[in-house]
Amino acid sequence: MYTIQGKGVSGGVANGPLCFYRRGDHDIAKHEIADTEAEKQRFESARQTAMEQLKALYEKAVAEVGEEGAELFEAHQMMLDDLDYVEGIQDLIDGEQVNAEYAVSQVAEQFAQMFASMDDSYMQARAADVKDISNRVIGILSGAVAGGIDSDVQVILAADDLAPSETVQLDKSKILGFITQGGSGNSHTAILARTMGIPAVIGTGDALREDYEGKTAWIDGETGELFVEADEITHERLSKKHAKQRAMKELMDQLKGKENVTIDGRKVMVYCNIGSPDDVDQVLANDGGGIGLFRSEFLYLQNNDYPTEEQQFQAYKTVAERMGGKRVIIRTLDIGADKQADYFQLAHEENPAMGLRAIRICLTRPEVFKTQLRALYRASAYGKIAIMFPMITSEWEVLEIKRICEGVKAELRKEEQPFDENIELGIMVETPAAVMMSDRLAKLVDFFSVGTNDLTQYTLATDRQGGNLDRFFDAHHPAVLRMIKMAADNAHKAGIWIGICGELGADISMTETFMALGVDELSVSPSAVLPLRSTIRSINTAENREKILEDLLK
Ligand code: PEP
Ligand code: MG
Image: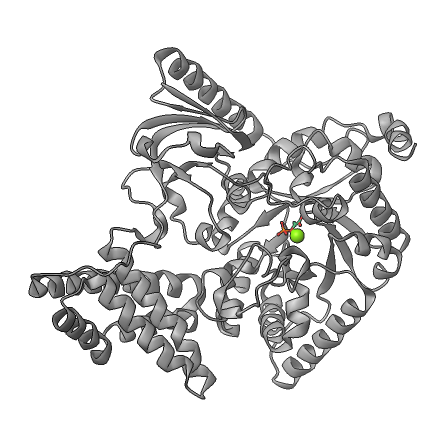
């Protein structure tokens, strides 16, 4: 048995084979090939496999975001069938007697350069598409796997770390748990694991070795341990823990349908954080009262080009309809920093967390912003949508956002498109500036939602992506809690509600403090809803309120 110690960031235990994430960045070195006919055949069969994958993706996208949103995958199939492209690769294999991977990468580069040099911006954008289809073919040729998981059974997925764009494309039905060498508690792998309600361990370092591939392991997301080929005693112990976990879940299930109310009658809204329309299943299964944060980045991260208005509209409409009139707070795109999409072509930044991200991109590229806003307003006709803006620091930003929103509304009225005239607009309070200006900002919006992940990062000047900063990244720090208090007091003075949608919201050791601070809503991973409900129902807010506030301010 090998025991690997990391940090548990999503609780629970699971047992299954370890499988390492297959990435598409493979060796495309040039090799000389003697049998070029066989090599061309190898290319042809990879091309056919890619075609089948694209057909399947097209059908999945039609079901999720409608015909128009799926068009990209159809266009990719046509590109992959393009005679110039296919013959270019075959000729290179023949003429230079080179391996297929190399030939595909060379022809992809030539085509991409040709597209990029065209005047028409639509054609320029095709450069990314040709690279994308070529990477797919190269991936197949070199044994990489679509969705990153090469297994027919459910696995514990191991990786060095996973980028946001990688997590959105994972085949989630195959994952029992996550284990990564790097990462942080706020990384997207951790957030995804909590959404799915499965264990995750991060920060194992080199102890997690690729030669454990395929070996059976137990993962414990509470203690941060991974046991490869567990001995009998460990197997027995964790099997018992697993059974207890199931029993606990059954107990929690009894809270479904009950109110989130304290002993002394204070009601709290418990909503969910989601990252894609698929996550609504988990929200409904865990009896979430609404959606407090829909990270809309998923649409941008899984695409190779800006998602169209229609594609976005379909996704937002689906979520609004499925939530059946419950509040769905959709956050406008938060691209930048660690969430990169190549086609945005953002310049390299020395300090991306403080760079052009989130609302700053939207206000710099109003056309991208307006497309998303149009989709959001149109979807508001199908449910109770609210819109939230990330990374706000100043009043002028909110005033400009509201002006753009009014423009979008006027356009839609003119086109006679239905939308909710009274849609609520809120902001994330996730910068110290937003807290310090919260008295004035509260007068401009309908609600606040505190993003404790970024608020901790910016208040404590500590990178949320981890490194060796765990000791310093302390979301319980009084500086952070005092900020929440200030924002809550100012929200209430202006008559608006305030929630928390950062990861701290699910920390049940803090629930009583949040009640004392007057927080009205907590938005958490779906799997945290029922444990949080149980905690809220055990609190008497009057009991410790004075003491909690005194301790915080002394
Ligand atoms: C936050 O910063 O706390 C937050 C909820 O937003 P994200 O984690 O997406 O930056
Ligand atoms: Mg944030």
